[in-house]
Image (cartoon, rainbow, N blue to C red):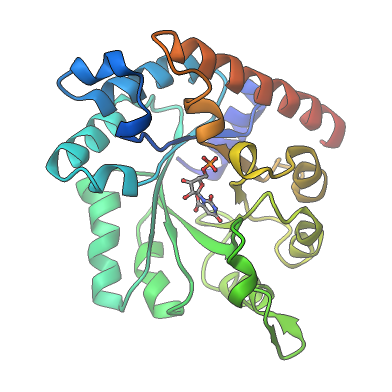
Length: 270
Ligand code: OMP
């Protein structure tokens, strides 16, 4: 999916919600465990219940590969089931020396047909470039992460600026707003304003609302650009909103609450 198509979907749905498909076998409603592929059945019902409210789905690969072959099958079936109108993110956080990154890119862009993949910037340009060589595919680079440990390295001062700022300044020259997005955690709204002066046009993938306590309103206020420019993710806050046989209805209600807030924020800021 290209940028124009993504912006069109956001406007049509008045939503910039990305739903994180992070299914944990220990948290699935018990009745699903009887299914041949419980993970896929769970995702299928979540997608059926929420697809009109969101513009993207982000399966986190850890929740699939930890289950071995069955997990990879569930991931492929989930990807096949996501409607073509939705932007897909392989949350794999890869990045390695060039020839290895090329294989990772091939895994998620050719073997599987994700629109995008999350990539770690730590190994530098030659670890990221192989992902950018695929036509109509996106890199989503970890810029400033949502977790507490983001304080360990990302805020260290280097040449008078925090390290994460260098990531934005340097990596913006590696790709364009048509094929490169950045992760910025919703738990850092006060940094988003500054980040927007460095990268005014790129889309930001913003995880951390819901279970991690990030602030949707604040991050939208500082992070929105004229095309919206945001994909805000919620995983546990939506997919585990209910626990029983009606879990999908609860997921829908949770997604609807976020979407309604987003519609109001879109109205206010663009
Ligand atoms: P919830 O906290 O359940 O909404 O899940 C957040 C999802 O976003 C998980 O799949 C995380 O791996 C992912 N994530 C973060 O939480 N923080 C980050 O800084 C980056 C990501 C990510 O790349 O998506």
